[in-house]
Image 1: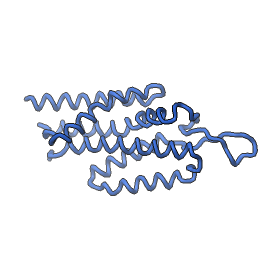
Image 2 (image 1 turned 180 degrees about the vertical axis):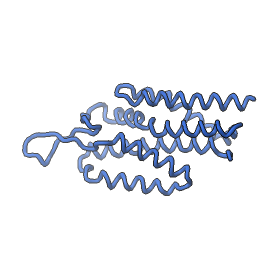
Image 3 (image 1 turned 60 degrees about the vertical axis):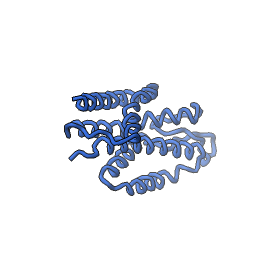
Length: 192
């Protein structure tokens, strides 16, 4: 009975964190992701201390796994935004399409251009692909995900601000997805 209550509370906390993550995606609210990270941290720490107790019902493991997947995909964006804000201290101007504004050295007149556009969408896709590939038993696919992202952005990385943002953002995003994947694997282990 106690195990059932613990699992129900855990599932409720995971889904509450998912709801918070959706609010944290909005500009100015990225800090909300901090409390949303608590269930992931708790599951990973519990798993490091010993095996996580098997869910008393497969539906609880399924709900936890789905919630953690959503949290891993959606929650990565505010995590990346918070870490980029800390790293750049707000010194990098943001563009209207999700990229950053940099001086266009190819232009004869002083001008700015937006690079690293679409990073939010790419982040959602990379986190989903990472979680899916590891859960499917293909962790080697993570190398392909990183390679595709690097090759796709290669032409925009001539600017030092772009390189810094790309590295910090990618590492933060992939680390968050990896932690959520670890939590997923720990919660569904032993469920058949």
